[in-house]
Amino acid sequence: MKRLIKGIFCVVIVALLAACEIGEGEMGKTRTGKQIFDGWGNDMNNLFSSIVEPALLFNQYLENPEFEMENLLHRYFNDATITETGDQSWLIYHERSDSKLYLSMLHGNSLNDEGAVMRIYTIGRNLPSTIAGAVFFLEKAGDGQWILRNSNTFFLTLDFESETLPSSLKNSKLTISGNGSFNHNTHDYSTATYYIFLDFNIHRNMVVNQNIVRLSTWPWQSYGSPVIWDSGSVELTAANQSNGGSNTAEALILDSKKVSITIGGVTQEWDQSLPYGNR
Image (cartoon, one colour):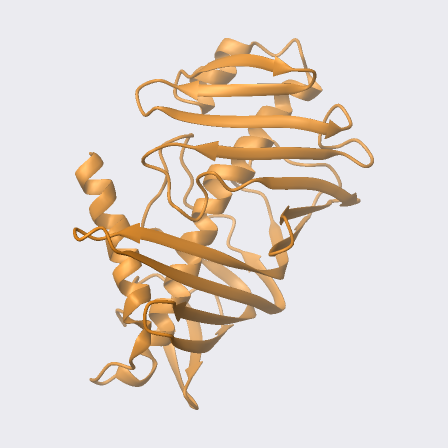
């Protein structure tokens, strides 16, 4: 399983590394742009699965302390154990994967309280580098609206159809806006380190297809599964620090199946559901 996960994750990195040249073939002019778009979709899915979804699930317990903790851990956290590490702070530990999820309420008693702020981060050897060890804050910003931020480099607004935070992202209508950067970090066999920065700037609110968000219980993530979108547009820039190369692509969602990719002055349509540059 570990080899499979690492193998799939390497495909994501290779796809982004390939964003230094525009490929050849029928769709070659925009294939790089589609690869960048798919990489971002995979990053967003990992963000939803590793940070946002666990916060929503654990919030059920915060709003209902009588909720059976063992049932929560069994259903949503793969039979992990939980430890209270301080006032309004918890550690959820999954022994088999050696993964740890830290949650703290800095303000409020739950995420639905006015001014609520939850601190979330997770570490583990099989978690994607874009998420592992990164500290996120989920803050209530208004009716049906929360902000997810990571220091000063990541600012994402989550708008839900309902005024209260749902118990899960599954079957929840979600619209996102904002901008940020995902930092990819991997090591090759010569121990050299490569950094891939994937910056995004949402120009028109991105609506998540609520029926196709690929999520799984923590800590097993859906590697290699980009999010499917219903509408919106986003500008994406992938940069490779090792050679200074970068590419910028524009993605316009046409519907839940098609996305229009523009890169290098060329625009072509792609099927959203086919990952890593396949038409």
